Length: 600
Image (cartoon, rainbow, N blue to C red):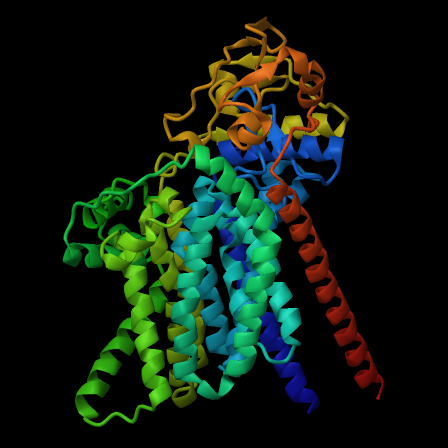
């Protein structure tokens, strides 16, 4: 018994080391051109600094509005405001870029570990297949590409493994699993918004039928249903405050955008397969044939019929996983041809139908074609989503599970450690494909030097009260001006060209007055204008000088909000405390049980 424990421990450590290597490579890819990083970090890093200042001055209360951007804008009601996130918490202590790298590493390892345990514990796959599956799951093009360019919301992608693990887990109490799922959903809502929530729902709708088809005895349908319903209730109540605030804001700025993929269904499906092949498979081929791998950016556009950057289109799987899936597909086709009377139970048939339906819906969402997509596009919040090629990422989780299954079946019949070693090596080396692109491909042109310097000044006690509205190119590029508010902010909710941004302010001193107003937008007019008797972009009245001074010092004036928002604020806080309490109490009980067993 003792030797078996040592072997298992060594295998576990090796599996975690593989996850550490994948995580390290991802961090090196992100940090390759330091101090220059992906272009969209110029949105998130200045907002991390701004919220950091707010928390230092006001504690952990909600930052409803900020004077730092656009002459006064909503903060919490903005779907991209990430005050309640892991990276924001870390940026309170270390500079924003270091916080981004550290939180990415931590989240990656958590996701890797839960996916590994999902395969090894729940599905009872061998440790080699579980290790490879976890590497496939973490090292995908969708996750890496978005981290490169600065789409910080997708930093939470690995946590989808936590949700799936907790959903099918039967060892821990269902209330513990429900609370864990609810907290992950809340993190996603506060940081990633609705894109990732849809991707997660689509992923789970495919993954669950696959898990049932593979191992139906693993499913305790009663517990899974109870966990799903409870976690849904806890999630909705915990994010209710944020969702209502976003809805109020977007009522006035709906940002209804639509993609136009002028291609047929056949080319669309080919484009979807191209997205899944991705950079890690195609770039090495181009390099070996002495072609420029940057050719892929234009090639992806032509195949998919889109005009987006490669970071939006590349959802690439590991080359090893792609090979496994093709071999599995060939084997399945051969099995169907030879087996004239497949032995399929009623429940398996239903699971297969649900799987096909989920795949079809995901394909429709990705290609922007079909009746289901046409219906869902009219729903609240979904009207503002576009770049539908992102929804191809929903296939990553289920395809990775299928690949791990197939590896496990092969290893049972052919236990070959050398093949495992080669697969691990190729999986790791394929990640290096992202180093083959120049910094222009991902627009790595935002320098983090200024943000690091600002963080040091804030650590020394500087608060930077706002006095001016500036329109200088340098301030706009840095994203955060020390004592100024940016006249033209980088804020996509108003349109990529600020089409809906029509303020009545002008560059100059904020305390200047004209027509009974200061030169500062009243930000509550963009979220709750009705209950404050305002119209959108109305400036702060001269009669509200005290509120202006509080706002400029980064406080929150007592502007009115609807009673519904107040009730939901309390409800979300109470649910958060309840969920955290459940996690701590259950963890303490489990720890006590383990200690008592070890003593006995």
